[in-house]
Length: 216
Image 1 (spheres, rainbow, N blue to C red):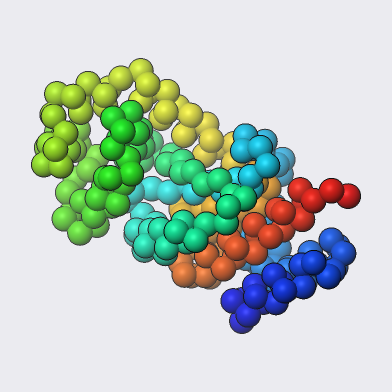
Image 2: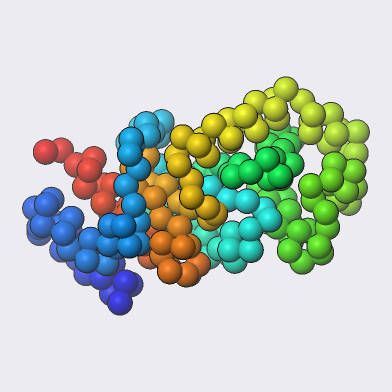
């Protein structure tokens, strides 16, 4: 039903005034059922592009399930959107995984190894919270152990972890995976009712964000 409403919403977009179209879209993605509003809303830094942020945790099985669906969505991502990831810090035991994310980013290896971190945790059952285990894992993937460890404890990565911690609080992230659209709309696997249900809700929230941005 959601996918059919998405198609219909796109068809009528040019025909309905903003308030009526918003009501039609909301029939598919219902406020406080499939998504919620952030209060206060958060600023975006993506110019004329709708911003999408994924809050995730490498140890989260639902995030692991979402990844192939999200990667498929990214291949068809609308041209007027900008996507980024922020590793959530719901509790301090998550911080070592956040440090992995920013270490990969600092070394220019995030795109290549992001999925492989999930695999190491969920498939290979590696203790990815232990620095020595992670350094050995990185070495198996072609990253010099000393280079990895130096980046892992660097000020740049420390700053990334601090930013992720602050963002998790500021965006009021209730759990993972959560997606925030244009600093205003949030959905999650819990709100969507399933992991696959996140993607069609995301598409509808992007359409709502476009309406918010449209000239009055």
